[in-house]
Amino acid sequence: MATVPASSVEYLHIPVADGSAGIPGEIAVISSCDEPVEADWKDAVWDDGNYKLLIGPGTALPLVAGTYTAWVRLDAPPEKVVRRSGPVRVGV
Image (cartoon, one colour):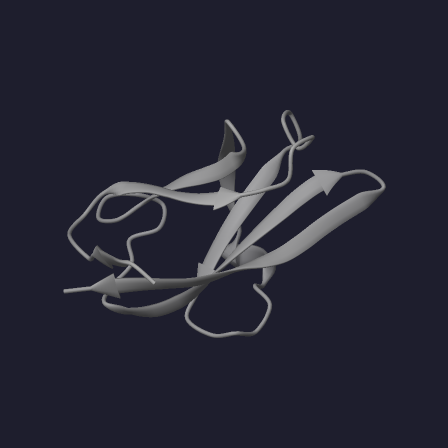
């Protein structure tokens, strides 16, 4: 697991199977392994096989040092698919 410095502003990429292009997606990054609540979800952007979200200071998701769990959610009616992506480590 790679560590992202807490001072870094960069995209968090979550790969999703082909065929997801154009489907609205969201990313949640939370400090527990529980499922995210509605307020945790942030709009993500599709980019060549990945959904991405800008994280770091001054963004919608300014993370402090710690280990988090990343999730992705796709809105493809009648489905609303939620998947745990894996750990995200933010360092000092």
